[in-house]
Image 1 (tube, rainbow, N blue to C red):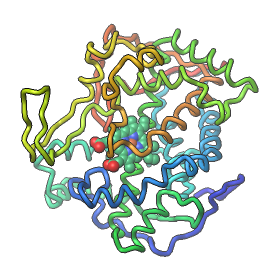
Image 2: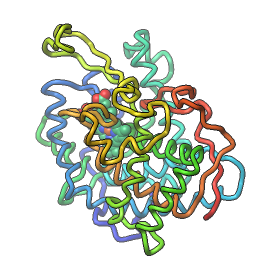
Image 3: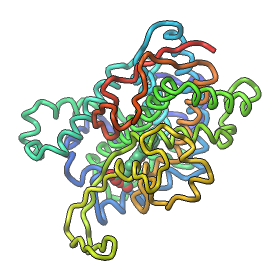
Image 4: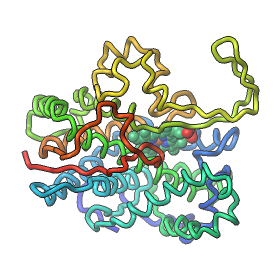
Length: 392
Ligand code: HEM
């Protein structure tokens, strides 16, 4: 754990109600224990508790941490500059682990400073297990699942909990309020924090690593992004206030999510749904929604298989029906972290590009759908996130 070395509005204290170890039950991936897969009144209760921790007044509190952890990342990246290709995923992931766990739970992990590489590797491994378990009916019961030896790995992940009394309250404070009010169990809180570890760090890290890889593959796009940053950030440093002006960086992130964002999700229909007027899907059906197909449908995208950030120019965004882009989903189950994630990603990417240039020996395929992927919540490149880094 790192002690506070800078001004931090959050402070830190040990929370009595969540003493370790309370890891029992963290493996019930397919049950209502987890926020992501809970439903009905159970889900609504948890969502109502945590939603306020994503409001703008709370998000603004995080700027100091976003700035600090991004700076550590950019400085540490210097050790790879000028060398051969390196896989950038683990350093990026550690940065988001530090940022998100401090912002949402008040825990200062020091993952980057202490080079907790194993934490990132273990989390990626567990993410794959979760996906594997979702698709393999043989692994659905806890008994069979425990025989695979993977339960132990999940249980090891949560071994210390801290929170802070503050106003406005952050994510973990709200969950603890739910515990005090009697609506949430300790197991559920641990599960939700674990959920956040995955939902809030792996997704942002995969997206950002892809951005660096795409920019290495497409030098013209990288140059245009760099020019935007240089013209916007006149002091030679990116400020959090600059984020809303970095519109091309935002377009690049969205185009990245179009290609490699969550490829599918599923829902259970609570009422009959009419599709295109002539087909009815009955209530009770499990429906798989394939966003990867939607995000490459030539009805909505001029160049479906290309990396073309202009898909997200204001004119193109106006022309397209709203539901055609679903990287964060929409409706009541929209990703609550979407604004926070975009703010953190734009800032980290811009700060990095201002200092470094990316390149690669890999050649981009004609159509990005021809690339080989693994499914880890999102699409992960089989060839990894290998890039060469040069100081500007
Ligand atoms: C690039 C970054 C991110 C992407 C692409 C992303 C995407 C998504 C998607 C597609 C879902 C819906 C999944 C489903 O229902 O099947 C979701 C849910 C969720 N996300 Fe994110 N997310 C990102 C970052 C974050 C961050 C930073 C946080 C929190 C700090 C977060 C917290 C959550 C939570 C708690 C849910 C569950 C919401 C619910 O079921 O009501 N996400 N995310």
